[in-house]
Length: 486
Image 1 (spheres, helix red, strand yellow):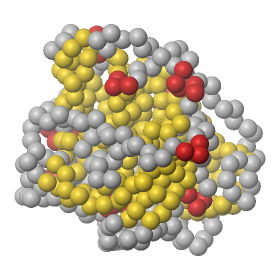
Image 2 (cartoon, rainbow, N blue to C red; image 1 turned 120 degrees about the vertical axis):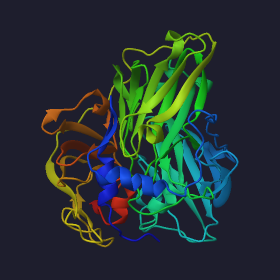
Image 3 (cartoon, one colour; image 1 turned 180 degrees about the vertical axis):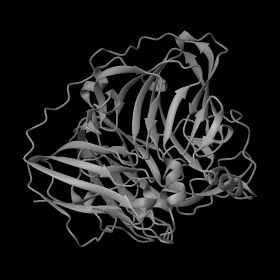
Image 4 (cartoon, one colour; image 1 turned 90 degrees about the vertical axis):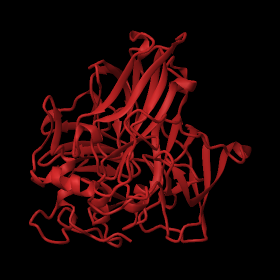
């Protein structure tokens, strides 16, 4: 059980308190580098970057495909896995996989998962980004205990998207996810499958996160410990390399960190083509040299390695702190090792987004956290700590609304995640959003003082759901609220 300790140091860092510049990492707070050094003292030696191979994530197989549905049986258990070479680290897993596996689903085809909990703590499994009924949402208080099982049914009556599932047991979600309870859920639809995008071995899910280890190589969890989590993992290995062919690849990126923001770029400044975000494909692809991901956000990116000769090594860099460039700046390296034919291409039009019905209600939502130095600061939504029994917003089923969400803090960053619905981001700080936020979203970043305007339609299920900051330490400290659709 985690406690509500001070999160200000880590939260300040997550704003990008240190940015990688031409002169290296320049912390905006003098204490930052000292804390990072102290946190790293006594830790196990992490191997130099690019000395271990990045694995591909295993794909779960259903135990049955009868009755027009795919049925899975998953055991939630603690195991020891090699993260640092030669060291066995205890982690919490879905079916023994660290990081979590990939479940591939299809729009219109039901998925049923029976989770068996063999841990000593209660858990709750939330399909992040999924449109599901309240009893299948995996809410913070809807847990199942040690030695019990819970079956979740996902109808998948929504467009294709790169979703994920993770623990959501209140006050424990932060530590459980840090220790490994997250996995990828890739939902495809007919439109996506008809496109000539890279597929098969050339479509690669990558789960990114940070971690901290002690002298024996075990994960060290402490709430707000952003300065100490300076080992970057890609698919569960520290700053690995990944061998690619000289052709196009589709990378399904997930930021599964509790608190860390990533700003990703190729070391040669090369271009990437972003084709999707949280809620699936964009209407049109766009070319960029950087991809930003706050905790829980996803990005669907195509990189064309045919522009590089065989033998080229290109680093995917992170340009946000905290941590030194050697610690957090080198995410993974792509090694171009062979040629390959490439029938894939990125079409000029990827999909047509659903129309936005006229909004009948406007709401203002304020995210904040105590910044007065108190020992146990509160995470607040509209000035209140989450109460499981309190309904904060009541919404008429079938309506569309505009939510204006503001980060009232001057130092602490947040982001905003709403269960059940994929929303559209209309404005950021009063201006139209860029192409990376032009599609369907379920999580959106909010740096200090920022405001976003969102359009959401509530036309699927009735019931009670939550919205919260997905810097999981913040939601564990109360930055969460309930909305009821009736």
